[in-house]
Length: 314
Image 1 (cartoon, rainbow, N blue to C red):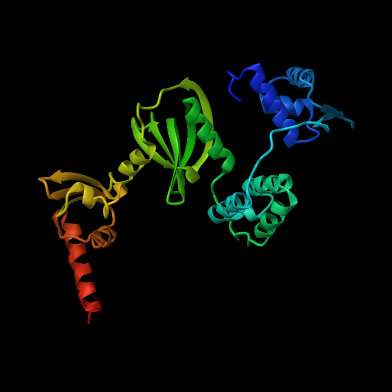
Image 2 (cartoon, one colour; image 1 turned 120 degrees about the vertical axis):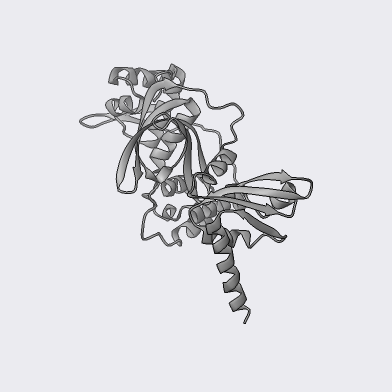
């Protein structure tokens, strides 16, 4: 937990921890809050002074739980909203079908607080979803820490897997971005001295450093991510498209490359690629005339694609 957290914030976090972990001890609560056991007991006292029913549990170590009478703001969801939320979670994260999964545990909490007429259809949909045979590699806890570091402007030291090797990097995390079902960290790497895009599922460990930073002004994280992914590959590409930039953008997504105007009626596509065959297939979707003016490997790939299409026509 950040050292700058004030007593009120810690008291609220203590309430959340006691709600989520009935029987939590003062020592465990202190570890959760980043304070001593004695300080944790003081925060429990603060909650009790606010007339919140925090009860002590019996046993060899003792602990705390929320007693009866705690009134929280109701969560108001329509049938379509509640079921739609569960469907979206299951579609994007199939492991949510398992109660042991963090997303699955969140769905279980939602089901418990919903009225019976809403809970039953949600529960049946959830329980009838087949769990995946392989768990997703992305760690929700690590990802949430990345998001918090971005929000706090806190520099990180992290271990990043590249092939079979692990590299230690020091970065300023700017944003965590979801693109095509994959999570990325957009950051400035002090190790490389350049902007970098890291796959979140390849980050093994992160450690928050005391250094803070300000992200770039007017940062458009998704645009910056797509621009970065379009550059830095082996073969340079230059293509002239017989359409203005506004029209060409309909077929050429930003991650494919950058577009610039050529007069009033044409556009120039600049990009890089490691796979000319794949790039040629992307160009084939453009519904106006175009021609390759740079990159011999791409010219060869376009010719081969044309030959294959011609043979397919019979």
